[in-house]
Length: 261
Image (cartoon, rainbow, N blue to C red; front, side, top):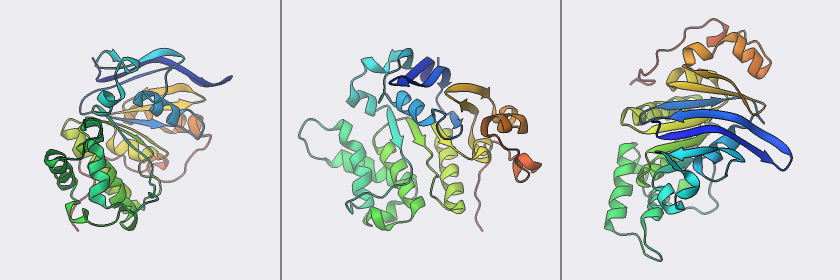
């Protein structure tokens, strides 16, 4: 049984159909990538996977339980959201941002305790940014902010990470570092679901790819089989003449993306 299972879900905003008969599963230690043009339903599908929206038909289940039957605080201990690059309005420190991940574990009106601070510190150390704990979140780099959000998700205790275009706005080096961190987390048993506009990212880190077009699944399966010229042409309406899909080498899945230089 998949840890998270999306079964034949459909969703509409008013009379506008956004998703139709979409199914996929996500298991422990697996990375699944969503590919598709703007308006294809990727963000809506992620919101359904998080329990933020309810499907018009079909079901989303976590270990066999419908998300609609799981209390929000309990669900937050299982599922964590890593958004696109953003800048908070208030200059919380990186450590404070990560500590916020402990909120689902706090009793009503309780303050953070020593165990919460320990969990936040351990999360900072695991992603390699404990030296940034006292820095303002608004003043660190984009890549460091994204790693802070991963640390917050880990402090939250969630083992399923749902990420909406998490490398959007990052420079190339920080994109690679972020994807490498995702790979390392999957090796530790974390399940990762992320959307991207970059097929080469899915080729590098994903176990499976789901291609969405007009709210329907165009193709689903291992990236080496699914990401090819004909599917890219059908998905995006372009035939690339450069990069991996223009004849370059496909990277080896599950190998480290970075090395010391």
